[in-house]
Image (cartoon, rainbow, N blue to C red; front, side, top):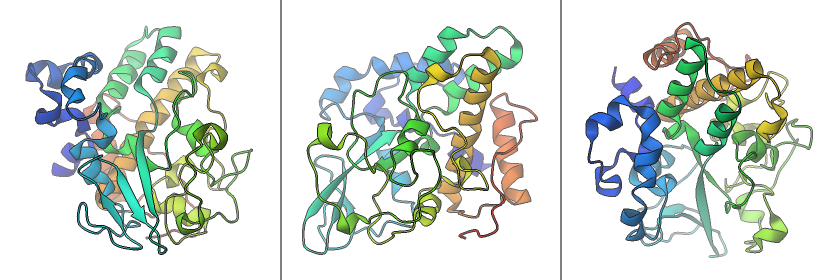
Length: 305
C-alpha cells in the first residue's frame, strides 16, 4: 500500500542531501542508518549544517498541516507562513509585519533512545524487534514537528517528545491540558533562549488560544489520555528503572510515531481511530516486526475532524 510506504519513508532518503552510497545497506539495515547519516556531515556543510528536520522530505510534511496557511516559498505575506530556501526555516509574518522564524525538531532524539537501549541491552526476540522497529521509524515524519526556536543542550537523557510536550505551553506542570494559551500573533519574538529556555515550544499557530485544538492541529491527539493528560509525565529516561518498562516506553514511542505519521499524511484529527485507520497502522507496525501490537489512542467524546 502506498500509504504504508509514505508512513515508513525516512526523511533522510533524499539522495542529493544524504549521498547514499550503499542503497542495499540503507534499505536492509535500519540500525546502520545513524552511522551513514553521521558520515554526511561534510556534505551538509554546503547546506550550512542543516539537519534532517529541515531537509526537503521533512519540509513537505510540514506543508501538509492544515493549521498553517502558506504563501509560496520565499513569499512574504502578512498573516501567512512561508518557507525560506535561503535558511531552510519556516517563517510566519505577523499582522504587524514582524517576521517570526520557526524552527523544526526531531521530537525524540535517536541517541537518547539508544542510551536507554545501552542500559538495557535487548536479549529476547521481542526486545530485538523493538530496537529494529525504532531504528526503522526514528526519522519518519511522525517524529518531527515545527516548534518555536529549539533550545539545544537539554541533555541526552531528556531529549524526548515528553519533555518537549511538558514545556509546550499546552499543559501545566502535572501534564494536564491548559484551558487557554497565547497565539503566535501575541508572542514576543524573544531571542534570549537562555532566559526563555523551552517555554511554549509548540505555540506556533497564529490564531488559536485553545490548547486542545492545537494538540489536534499538530497531530498529538494520541499522546494524551481521554482525560487530556500526557501519557508520560516525565522527560528524562533516567526515570525508567526497569527493563520491562523501558521497552514498553520505546514500543509506545514507535506506535505513536507511526500513528502521527498516518495522521499527518491523511490529515485525520479525530480522537477515535476508525477501523480502517487501525488496519493501516497495524499493518505498518507488522511490516517492521511488531506483530499484534495495538494502536494507542483516546476515545474522547469530542473529536476534531
